[in-house]
Length: 598
Image (tube, rainbow, N blue to C red; front, side):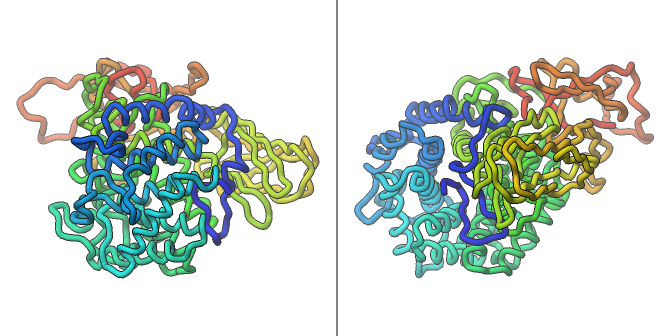
């Protein structure tokens, strides 16, 4: 089955790209744009920056020590998209592989001398994931041979040491290669990498061992901490190991860490990571909007982790978080033209950035850019969108579960379904049966959708958040219609989040909304929202919102503090336009904010 995650056990089984076909719509359009524009854009920039030429032996070598991994992510995107340029790029990569399977254009001749920062095993992880994608979509070829040789080299070199990489990812890659090939040593190598982290396995660094998740063995940790991308990648690998080895204790450990992290260390958008200095999680409830780092790669890792936990447990809350993160970070990370990207995803930008047309050397400046010194995010977006159909639906012995509402066709075990919807703009989701069959069809009802209804064979009933299911022998042409209330709602932060106290945000369906201001007019630093009715406007098919607001220009003074609390902001009430967060910044440099003082 062509799927980015294919566990051999679990409550749910994923339906892959051969069973789910995306049609035009929110995600289908983005997948098509990715295939037609973004993949080529990434390849052009890596050629321009000299990263591809590294594999041809070009000197001096160009790019950061981990730039090989970006070629591999692009190969994975090409594999899932069945892109015709893959064989040529794979042949280029093969040129740099040594006789024993070692492959790295930065460290060849000086192997494994810097486990903290060298990223050698990290690069292998992305290479292996590309090979698994190619194996499942196409079969054996040059790329898969390169990957098998590299994986065998890893096992020979690391099986009986206590060494590991400063950046996890090889763990889940090795498990997926085991799933694709049945070779037991790949699973055992992944298990040992998971268990040795935190013994400790790495040296001291200024950020501390928690940066690498190397401060505690995985079973002793209570929450995700340290570098956010590393943390969620490592957790995903631990889930994979737990599922394949039957380690229920390890699975429950990651579930508990995820639950605490979501409750205390996750932004409204689903973004993870609060600290710019080390791209890391903050302490509990440390969630400043303007200093939110929320790296795009961390959110992609969060989606990968949530999907794995969903498959392992069947618990709907994992699909709920995945949806939030998909619509409000993954969709935000790439511009509407498919050619520029966010690295960090703050929830407030105070001053519009300066427009850039070349490489961005300041990834957190609140501006989509065509390329970065560290361009992990563009290629991560490309491979995720290319494989997104594999996250949409699952199956079990009873039938099919639809977790993400998007137009397309789903076929599995005699069930043939067409999903028609304008979600997330509309809350109507229609599932039409294309052929006679039998089984249960389950549709996810998000936690915000109180009052949702399900209609079938002329009977309408209210359904609660979770899954709404209909089971029967189906006739071709039958329909199920799910109606999700899409009324805009005001959202209030936990009062323990100091940076957000006294502020509000607006959501509609799965979307978080924000105010943005071109040339900082009106000045969003001086806006206050009046909680009350919200007016909807449809602009080119996109739902935008108006809320009442007051713009206050404080009197000048020499000291921004006083002996009495400020009163209500003076000034006339006016309409403040809010746009979906995933669309902000497409008109050039702007100021922006999600959380607005109430």
